[in-house]
Length: 112
Length: 111
Image (cartoon, rainbow over all chains, first blue to last red; front, side, top):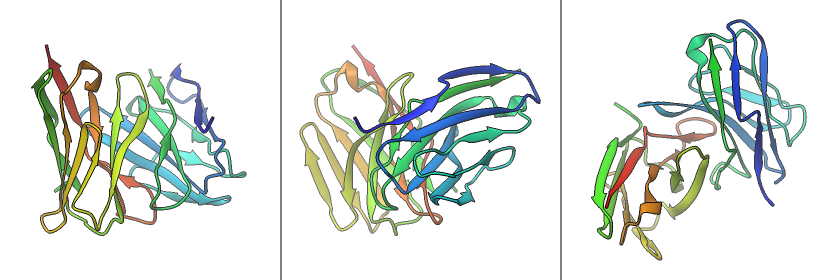
């Protein structure tokens, strides 16, 4: 089954404690992205990747890092999480720029 | 202004038609999409339309595109309780990659 898998689904952490949210897709897609969803703000892109070892900033990259060492995985790294990074995070993958995006189920992160 | 503008809420009675509207600032996208997000779930593609089309119909869904006015709408006929969700109309563009989203429209179904 074609899917994008994120882990964990829920995470509560403390300020400053490094964390990683994993994302994996099984469709051999070139493009992968991370979004955060906040009430009243919709989805905003954090980072994206157009291929292995090719990543770039989206609209709200501050406080986040990503890596794309292999095609299927695109982890999101918060080196020093802060409460303003409490949000619902989505990973997505697409074959090309003008193709359907497949989304993971989301990761609800709370930073206290 | 916003790249994609949508009303935040739409309330309709069960069985009526729902019309969700989007307005864009950038009309260069080849495809325009409608995604549905049910409570506690990720986003799922509902339908899409090529930018050279005016209309697309898919069962209860009708998509209308007015490229001149940069306006996209989604009509859901015979709205059901299962249609209750947030609807997004992202487009491809605004940068090297990614979908540009609006804030989403919460569709509320009244019994």
